[in-house]
Length: 474
Ligand SMILES: Nc1ncnc2c1ncn2[C@@H]1O[C@H](COP(=O)(O)OP(=O)(O)O[C@H]2O[C@H](CO)[C@@H](O)[C@H](O)[C@H]2O)[C@@H](O)[C@H]1O
Image (cartoon, rainbow, N blue to C red; front, side, top):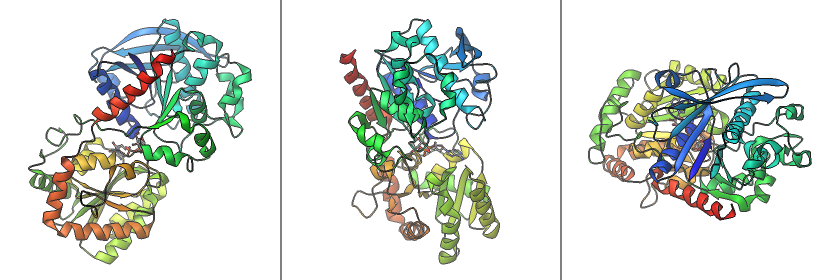
């Protein structure tokens, strides 16, 4: 079975967040299960493309409105990621360093989608499934079924996975000209709330859509940034499949980014060594409980609550707890966190920026990982924390609800709280400090967590079952 995954991100080629982790892992597990899974993504002028060898497998030209675009399809020659990797290069549009944030981002992603369809159409390929991820490839189902150019692909099933329903990629109708010849009677399938909405269009046109946790599928019908009604009426097409994690990349016994390796049996000692290295780097006392945060500093993650919650906790508990935060995003939150670091240098440190190795070191060296998310479609951080024996402290929402059981339950291993609020975070911090003082319980929890299985094996199979279910309709 031949699958094309379309995505803006893929680890380790280009990563901003969890989308990259999923698209860098799921196709690998699918390939191991006997599928021919490929990832197609925009070309970025980044280290990975310079360090690896690519063949040009196709060259073509297409139109974006009246603008003629020449494009190339580059294929990584060794399949070193465990699946086929294709990059779409369009000089002047898809050859830049950053993944997001350019003023012509809409044009970039529309061109990416058109070039993909032109390539598979003109080269005569008929995949068994086209699997689109998030709004950056959300126009593909519409174009496959309602553009006369791609009639040949009109029977190919499409699956659309929603990693984040908050971002829709919407733009105005004045950009309709950028799309190739379409059936104008069908333009309603592009529309939501008076504009072209790629996420909404994908949900309407794909054969099936999936969310990255079962609970998030339910939540979208009452919280999806304006698409609630759409998710409600299209709910029969939805399926929640919990993300897995790449247990080859995330393995405390072999992770090359860790100063000290450990397994479940040696978790307490192993984590202590990692914690000492981390605390030495950030001037923190390794004897105190270390509560950490890793993530994009955006409102969805509840990161704006952190400065007040940490300050109140430090006032309440004095010198009894340390915090370490890694993230970048909202300028006000960054400034407030830096201020906190200056005020409480012995108990709080902050690294503003993106650092993959440091993230691994924090998952391994921390005692607790805090996620006060307002929205969390699945969340991978808590799964990495669990895998490395670190207690997750999570707001009960989205995939966090599906994956973290509170320690109050007999088989629990995390700390849960209901509201994304300073009060609830502070209560969770107090619980963490109490829990930390119970050395035996901490040992038990770490071992328990390291024995849990959140690998892709199960979830990859659910995707394959979904693909199989679409086959008879061909
Ligand atoms: N400053 C930094 N330095 C280093 N590493 C950093 C970092 N900031 C974030 N990361 C890393 O980025 C990833 C974040 O993944 P998440 O799944 O938690 O969130 P994200 O919101 O990006 O993903 C969306 O898609 C994923 C995948 O489906 C869903 O799990 C999630 O709920 C949804 O919001 C993790 O690998 C984390 O370690």
